Image 1 (spheres, helix red, strand yellow):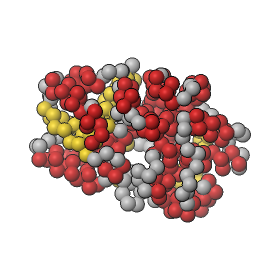
Image 2 (cartoon, rainbow, N blue to C red; image 1 turned 135 degrees about the horizontal axis):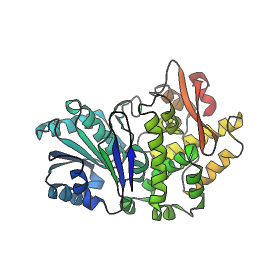
Image 3 (tube, helix red, strand yellow; image 1 turned 60 degrees about the horizontal axis):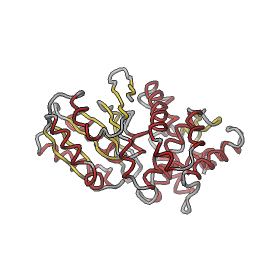
Length: 352
């Protein structure tokens, strides 16, 4: 299955195919001319997939350097970006060379940021190995690193030259990592795709979802594809993709990155936003209940024991979407339909 993301200045294809990691080099050859390739991955993925991907890339005539970093959100930092810049320079990478991100969202965001900023931009491809990265972070061009002030505070819009998605890699994901991606699929359905929502309702559990991965990955991708094509630089309609993320990112930061996953935080954020919106009549009745039932089925949390509204609000104040003491939040009118609502920071605590 091929999807095309058509943008004004840089369009590319997203390929979804089982067992495609083994043919990743042939795929790259259809996009890039012969060049040096930095295969950036993490310590976990490195042990499972790097060898077959590297062999495939080199078999197709590319000179490859593997750059493996520690797994986890803590690696999405300016310090790790500096480490990768040094590795690229030591190996004499130029603007004619490229970076391939092989890993989950952390690797995709970090490698993309490095590709965007090294020599003011070199070639970049995404091979996401987590469900979260496959349905969300690998497409759309958002790259970033975290700082002590906020998640994703320093970044750039930098579109990849292509994205390769192999659903077979989900077989090696632990259940906790699989759930992260399910949260983003639920989000996509909730904001824009009733048919996807109905499909998710029909699934028995997360294991059946994994077995039917293409059926949920492709419509989730189409939701993001359509929004990004309309609003590449996050100025208006693309903001709906942030449903649950404003509170979710704040939970991640205040809890400490790695304590609670991105997907779990987003799940809680979606519930928080919908509960208050329904209470004040901005969301259709029973929407919160439907959302909670869906998240429960896939074993995603609805609350966080250490939720501290004061700390959450402080973290939200540093959200990069804040403008003139206002924040655009995303509310559901009903399942399958979202709206963007500007609110004062003084009133955001009502949603907490």
